[in-house]
Length: 211
Length: 238
Figure 1 (cartoon, rainbow over the protein chains, first blue to last red):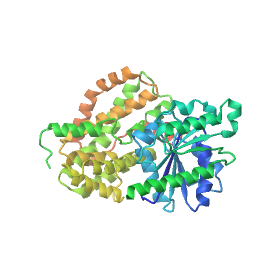
Figure 2: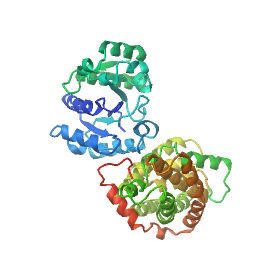
Figure 3: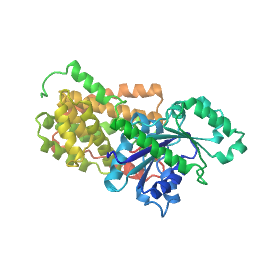
Figure 4: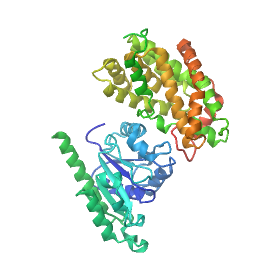
């Protein structure tokens, strides 16, 4: 796969907004001159892929959104054995050579989910405020090891008894300086910052490879 | 390279590595038709063993296992055009799209990984030769063919190669059965032990079967697979 193709892995627990974040990111990637394709890993194949196609109708060709089966275990399909995702990505690039950005959305999974470095250049882990303010403190590889931690649904924190300030403070504490981005993917809050952070992280990793 | 030497420890280790369920072959995402049978309600906990037995005898043995054996022979002599012909033949024998996609996605990734894994070691150059053809899309890249090339190149004898791949299939099938709640952690192991005589017999047949006879005749399996690839909800790629 070309080094010029950015591969973003988006993972996190069920219902944190991975799909809506993907849908919010696609237009921003396009506005920045990039050409994205989306590969979803739902528990059952097609639900997330259909949602992305429907929400981005008229923005991205539906054929540039594909679902991959995970064998009932999303983290295996993006970490232990990413074979089917790698193959789906290669097929997407063969079919649409203009694609320069692949967004891999993992199926909803637990705090131990991580992306294989061979599958994603930038690994984004998504929590939301309704997970509870203790969640960043709990840690887990997704929260501590991801390149970017997103805390989504900042707008509903007050309704789910979550102190966003505590959540953000703890997130920074356990991540030891790695970025944390607060978002509301439905109204776009923080999504541009997430895009900028993804691109910065990618540039940094490419620099490390060159060096 | 030789196909007649006995299996030494080095060859045993290659077999163990390639057939290990932790080897990233993509098998984890496959149910090999089982999910389709379950969705149609024609397999349950009492019949899952019989289904695995039938699949080995009627589908995998005449198909993938036979192709692997014949590919092993040609690859051991570096007759790459003949290996390619077998690859096309096996690809054509897989009637449903999902089975072709599953096999070639797995095979292409396997070729890529094996090329790196065995580089600089025995068989590495031959595996790289085949992997290059697969990568260049000069051949479909079916999993069984790539596997046969890997085993031949590393000196794993033909029968051991076929048995190893059949066992990898059985473990993958059993793993899918576990996740589909057709077995549990204990009955899975009972199933894998009970199926071993079938694997022995199927391997012996595959080693003897000519290339002209590649491909099974399993219309029910093909119908289940056809329904599965259009199902609204799927956990598995096949």
